[in-house]
Length: 187
Image (cartoon, rainbow, N blue to C red; front, side):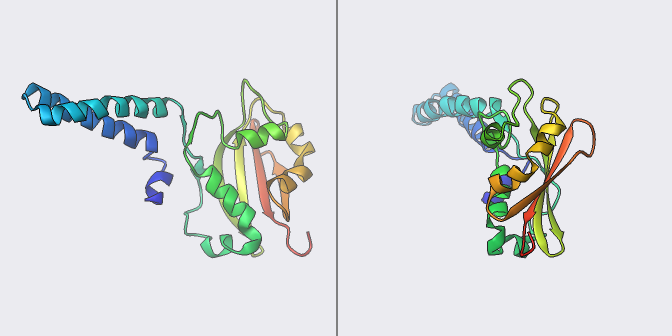
């Protein structure tokens, strides 16, 4: 069931909307056929569920594009030293509701937030570099200058978990790559 919700195609808001619409249609057809036992409960529950689903759809934020298949680095991801990165991956891979961007509160706390044009997490990629697990987070950020990200490079690793190091790069104007990895014995 978890795989169903982590998919970019099927969101919980879509499921609730479809269930509400289906109940409303069944109730309406039953009402037109004078079947009060079926029409009353399905319309009574269907319309609020439909409205709730539409409200969810209007405020949903899909997960970023996941460039690495979920099973690819599973063993490396589950090692104890990678727990903070595993939690971060699980957090950003969920559908969000009522937020402007993934990691909104973290970016606000780090002063990497622009209210009018917040950084958007475009993709996440799991990496195995020298047998160390890492996450590459690509942000589209027109409202936050790259220099601000660079200035916080040391703090970013510590912020997301103990024993993490961070490197920041700019692959294109308006984009920032944040590479988080376990520091290991030498870091």
